[in-house]
Length: 323
Image (cartoon, rainbow, N blue to C red; front, side, top):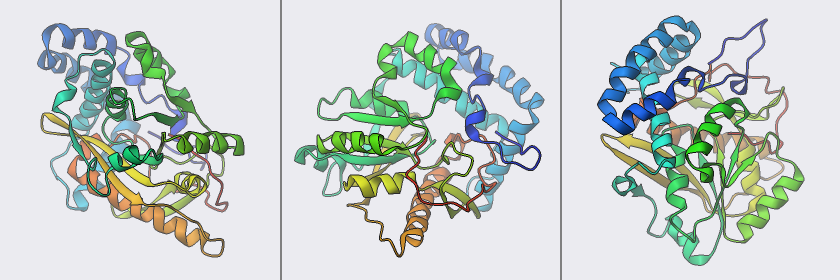
C-alpha cells in the first residue's frame, strides 16, 4: 500500500502489511474455541473501521479490483472482501503452524506426470520454484515438512513483518525454518543456492515483488491490462542454477485449498546479445500465468501497494531477489 511522496515511489517493503491485524491473537483464539463464523463476526467490524480510515488501502485495493473486472474477472468484488480474504489467509497461517488446519483436503496439481515436480524428486534433482503473493505459501511449506524427500529453501524479505513472524514462531518454531533472508543476491548466496539445488533441494523465490533497491532491476510486462514491473532476479538465478523451473501458486477454491505446480522452463539460458529481450519474455510469461490465477481467485492476491507505478528501470540485469 503506497502513495508516492515528493514524486518518488515508495517501496512495498516500507510498509508493515500486517499492521492492521494487531488483534489476530484474540481472533485466532475465537476461531479455535468457537469456530470460523464467530471469528468473522468479530473480524468484519474491525476490517470495516480499518478500510474506512485508511484511504491508501482503499485506493490500491480498489484499483486492483477494477483491473480484475476490466479483464473479465468478477465485477462485484469489494475492498472489504479483499481485506477480509487477507485476514482469513493470516488466520490460515496461524492454524497451519498451530496444527489446526485440515491439510487432507488440499488439492495438488502438477505433481505427477512427465512435467510434475515428483519427477525431479524421483531423479534426485533440485529445482527453482517461482511463487507469488497469491493465497497461502505457508501451506506449501507445511506440506513439504511431511515429505522427507522435499527440502525447501524460501528466499524472503520479511523485516517489515517481524511482529507477525514472531507470532508464528510462538505457535510453532518450525515456522521460521528453511527461510533465507535475501535483500540482494550476492555471488556467495548464489553459490550456496547452487549447492542446495545440486543436492536435490528446491529453492523458492517470489516473482511478483520488485527488489529492495533504489534502482531495482526489473522487466516491464503487461498485467491485468497495464504495464507493471516484475523482478528479473528469479530468471537470472535460474540461469545460474541450470535446473528445472516451476511456477507455484496456492489459492482457495470454495472450501478447499489448491496448490498448483506448473513447469515453466526445463532449463533457462540468458544469451548475452538478447538478454533484455529474453528477460522481458520470461516476465511476460510469468505475468500471464499470474493473471490467469488472479482472475480465478481475485481476492487472494495480496500485493497491497501501487503495483503498476513503474520504478526507475534505467538499470537492468543483476540477480536481485526478494519476497
